[in-house]
Amino acid sequence: DLDGVSGSYASVPDPLGSLGDFTLQFDGLSPETVRPAGSVSLFGQYGDANVDRSFLVRANVGGTIQVYLLTQVGGIVNYTSSAIPANTVGLRITRVGTTLTWWADTGSGYASHDTAPVNGDVLKDVNYPILIGKHGASGTPLTGTISRGQVWNNGTATGTAVLDVDFR
Image 1 (cartoon, rainbow, N blue to C red):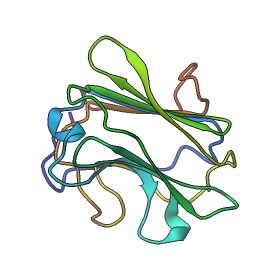
Image 2: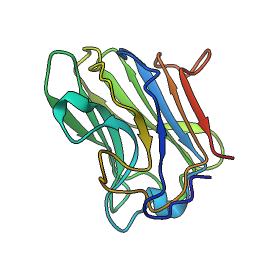
Image 3: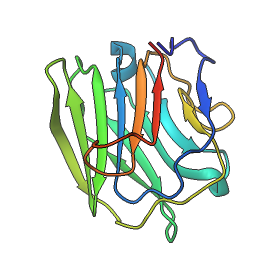
Image 4: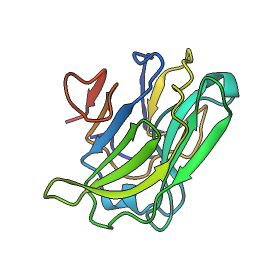
């Protein structure tokens, strides 16, 4: 598992390109990940400057999940879910067309949790690594654990993931 010790994170060279519809999935989450004492970065391609930003997923105090998206034609837009269950062990975020959906797994499979309308433009293609457990040089490090992070270039989590980082 990515151990959640402040300063521990994983960096993966960018395998994604521009994402249209997508699925981001994080499994093996600890209670400290879904109910952090302060906002923490779970996963993203989000540097310190706009030229290095495509997306970011953060967990907040109280269990809300923020998703920042930067498209090819627009600026950064922030979407926030309602609080996910405290016993969540997996989190999935999908974008299909103009709908962003948060899914939560409390141990018996993924169930739809919340939705938001979004811009359907493809995400910005940036030359910046995928960071798991922080963003930018030092932004909001993870304090809980993640066992696995995956990305699909479709909104259904089918086929082969374009990124599959398994810490187990």
